[in-house]
Length: 191
Image 1 (tube, rainbow, N blue to C red):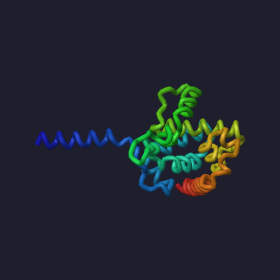
Image 2: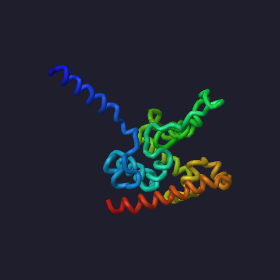
Image 3: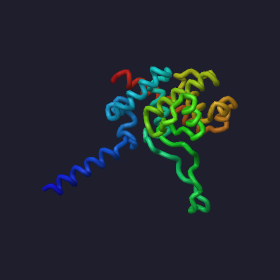
Image 4: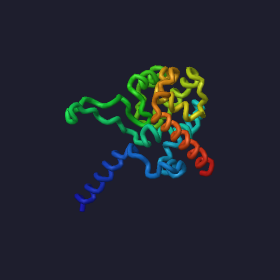
């Protein structure tokens, strides 16, 4: 009896420690269901909205596009000759898919050396910081999801140069992100 109780308790403990909410929520098309399943996501995004004035629905749509709310997602590996691993396609990681250099810039600027891209609070705060830089550098309103996403993807300098104009696939993605943001906005009004 003791052995069985110990085993069940150990399995429960390991399960609890291992569930850091890195897997995507079940329903990514329903903002209300998503936030009911992961209330800490809603708290993090509302804090970011209060601090940085980035609407929750804009944050949600961009996180959806970047990581599908998977906290430890990374870009795939590149392979030489189809079999020899050559490293990942980029240094992006986590909810926001922030690159190493941009993340380090955020950590230094905000005095947050312990911030982690795999933490939803840190990831949304980063997004608020970055989007405010986008407002400052590229004059893109915080509620303009499509253009904010293009600047998020291309970087401030790339956006200013119009690099996205030669990428029809990216313009299509940005349109879908904008549509998802509007869908989330309408859903959030009702929950």
